[in-house]
Image (cartoon, rainbow, N blue to C red; front, side):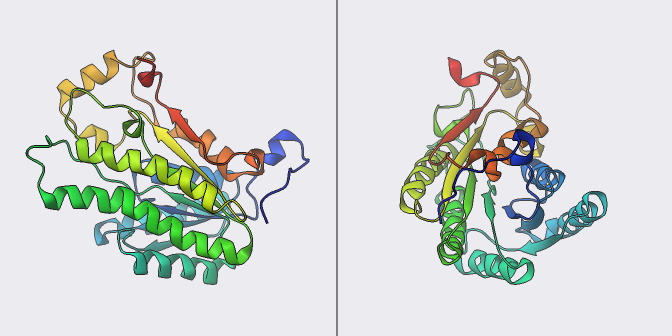
Length: 265
């Protein structure tokens, strides 16, 4: 059933106790901070990683969540670009936790390369993870939510789905994120009887991904950002908790931009 208004004191609305939240791309960067945020708000957390190189990091993270916040937490491996893997993973999460309340489709990759030099392999890789992965993850969660009668999907998009970033060339990434924004809106309509779907579009956030960029890019990014600095992953926590919580039961089909004002220009 689509969520009804919840009449609680405002801070109680943000409490995620009793909710099970699955997060893709949760081993590092924004995803790791979101896993912590969900646990801080008392949710049980299923942390999904892709590569074997991330396994140890993910497992250490869930152990910390359990010991520090007293929530249930478990690590899972799945390639979001492979529909059978992410579907099996989410079904396993339901088996282990008893249900799934929220999916945060957060896995993403980026590569700065001009359109004329972009190889078919790179283009497919970026599209497979960012767009196809968001779709396959949401599709698998949607099947669970339809059966349950309720659910909530939050997709990490990007300001790159709204504007063209400068000075770097990243047409493949921008196109994939534009697709993600439209995907979120489309699924919000299709899943309207049993789930909410929203997007979050971060601007330049200080993560391992942005840390690998050309220093010349960084100067221009900061010059074009009214706040004059990079955002911190922790500055995204409040919005994701809001969207995962009963404080946002009348919110679906939205795309929230958090970018320090970058897209004002």
